[in-house]
Image (cartoon, rainbow, N blue to C red; front, top):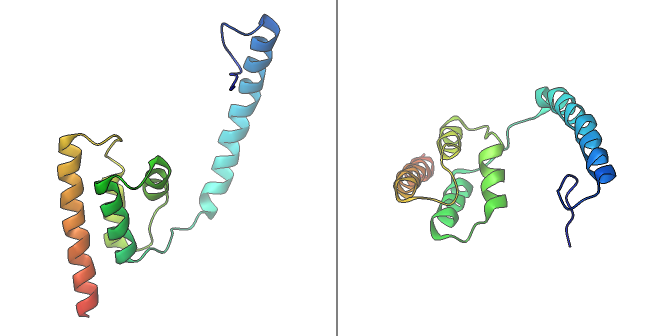
Length: 119
C-alpha cells in the first residue's frame, strides 16, 4: 500500500513533515539538475534505432518509460534530433492527430535509414 507524504488521511504531524520534506527536497533537486545539465551528453542513436522505437510507439509495444527516455535525452545526430524534438511535442496517450504526426515521423525516419544505407 503506497502512502503519500501529504494527504487528508494522514495525521497533522505527518502532513507537516511531508511539507517540510518537500520544501527541502525541491530546491536541492533544482540545484542538482542545474549542476548536472552542462555535463549531459547527447545519446548516440542510429537511424534504425529511432525507426524501431517510433514503430514500437505506433503499435503500442513501447511503454511510458520508453517514451520518456526517447523524448527526454537529446540525440547527437541532427536529423534524428529533429524527429525526437517533434516527438516531444506529442502527448501520451496518442490521439488521432498525434498518430498522424507519428506516421509522418516514421516515414521521415524510413527515408533517413534508406538515405544512410545508400551512402
